[in-house]
Length: 505
Image (tube, helix red, strand yellow):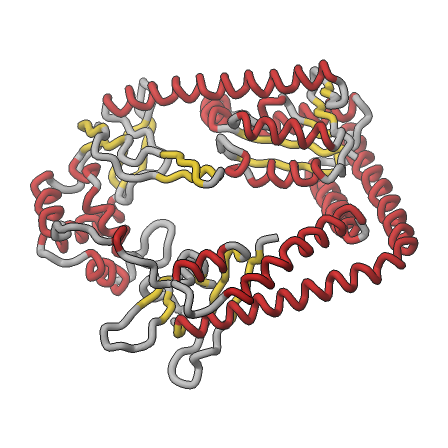
């Protein structure tokens, strides 16, 4: 069984603007021709449009590697090895090991890399190394080009500031910002209100009342208002490198952040300003937060569920709210006007513990059931064989559809409809086959066996006598996140919420 992986990069997107050629379609045709020439049937495709440097930024390649590691494929077709990875040596090592340990071949139009062949393995690893070098060189060149464009007053960002769109400069490379009249009216309201001393939260509430909406959200929030007020683009400037991406390694895990920098590029832009510089300065002066020593880093954590519970409606991280009146702390969504109702913090914490106990009971039952299933191996093998034959038959039908398209018996619409039906059927059969995969089931059971002792220990150790920080660490050691939803409020409905726990396996 063979699969195919396609990836469109940032460079491809730029090339498409001038050539008008769809990169993915061109690569898809190349791979189809390669498969036909080698008499290979492609049973699964992974396609993504992303320029992520690392594997963790590319969801489709993660899915592909997971199935490769499970030994599901004889080979993976790609246009070139640099489509697999341009990440660091850790990413390259993971890809090399995934293909080597599963004996999966990498098939390109010019060469087949066999991981069991030492020469091919070295050639493949060298190809990954060179693609990384090329990636770094291209990035440096692009960054130099961006900085030159910024100094010329051009806009080089991917998302235009609110109040602007962008247009191609005539007779030269690059873009400039153009005022969006409808959004510019809102920008003027924001600055006029800020100059009068109105706070960001009140400005957001006012805009929500008059029916205004930001581009990608349903309501305005104070953070968005502050970002607009502080952005010098509105009086005609271009700002660059204000938020550089920084990487840190903590306990072997790489974390990225985009903190604000004091040193950044600020230059006169080619675009028209929406407001005058004097208005921008006054708005910033009026909305400036009183200076004083920040004590955030000195405060101790008070919320045992910090960073763990997310809103089931808007997806934001739920926050603890304390009351000076002495009222019980609550857990609430930080988005104004979100319809997800708050609950007492301790009730949510107790419900999470109940959920962990339920998972522990369920996991123990799975282990018991798994032992009983060992007696059904022969039946599972029969079912597996039937499904595999059906997959092979469907792949042959898909192959025939390609032939009918080439013979012009099928038009494009008929082919697309037929191939979509067959691919969906293959996906369903592969999902069904997964249920009878002994290796897959063994891996799942092994993961459950590993997590059971952790759950038992956490439930034994967990106590309100522990600090909120210690309780938070215990919960995060076994839970990825908790999705919280509550649609009713008021007395008598305190515990009428639902939780969905995402357990680490």
